[in-house]
Length: 219
Image (cartoon, rainbow, N blue to C red; front, side, top):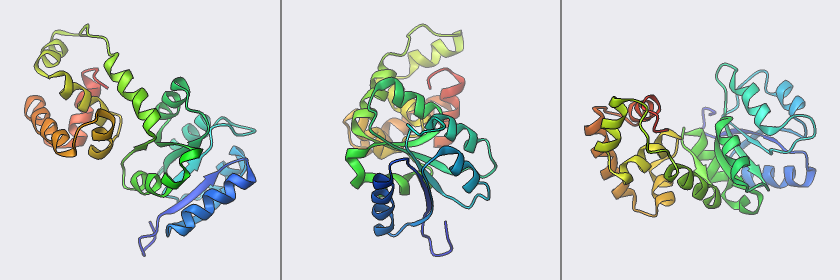
């Protein structure tokens, strides 16, 4: 961020009208739009010097898929966070984007939520459109019950179903607020589950809990 605290954001969108609208929306919310490109390759060149907090990316660009663009930028030092802004609400497309590094996923019909999604991404969290959050929950509930090792079996048996859901969401980068929205429970209830998780997993931070979830195959 700048010294005045303004989030520095860039936009990659091949529709000029949509690009202008997104830029206007973010600027009106007090953010500094420092780059706007209509192709992935132009964005790669424009982002070469860094200095960006968040990049808003359309998935369907004329030269590079948005997922590939995120992977390429994400390999750089001090890579920005990514927020996808797209018309695609398909499960496979959304999960692929999140796996490619997206911290946020919004549909273009939810443009009013873009400033919030960008701020959350800039602070290290995730803001996911409700329809996409539902896919995440379904993905979590579809986790295979068969343990990969005796150690994992013990942990899976020790955690409640709800604790496993919370842990999986945290491992995917969601904030407590987003996890509460996905699961349909209060933030306070999420925090209670997290305290129990910390005790059972013998960790003391969200980052450690997420890392432990990945190690044990609960991500």
